[in-house]
Length: 173
Image (cartoon, rainbow, N blue to C red; front, side, top):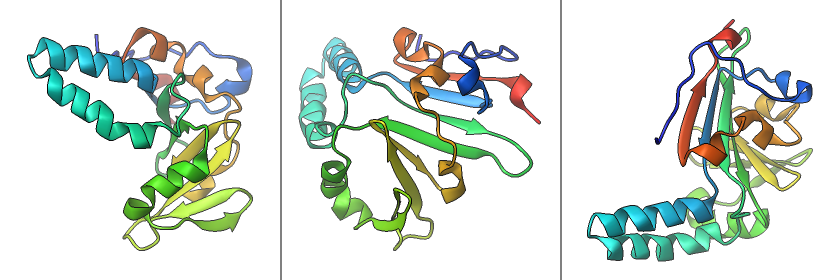
């Protein structure tokens, strides 16, 4: 199964992570597993060369990632619009940003470990590295009170599914 949706199910996670109370959690398995799945699917479809080409072209971008941890994101809702944050496991953020520089430009340091990218675009993005994770969002305020171990928010989705989404209706205001 590629995705799961659990309406009204509460997340099983430690009390420290419960403070976030996300409405939606999205998970993508670690990049090694994702690459293997892609290679399997393209080979099964008779276009294995396409899968191998994709893996080769993606390698400069994934070489700076911690390939054993998932990428994911969450959305919370309080009084205002939904706040969404994506988190990506990184080994070397500076190298990743250097690789992406032609696409995103040079990051601007805003202090407190927060960088702004895409300032030449209609909407820039903000990121902050913490404990081997880079958190990315479109609102700098979302980078306050980040989870110490964001994988706990996934409740095991990354271990069961390649791509998964969990909806928590009880977190709706």
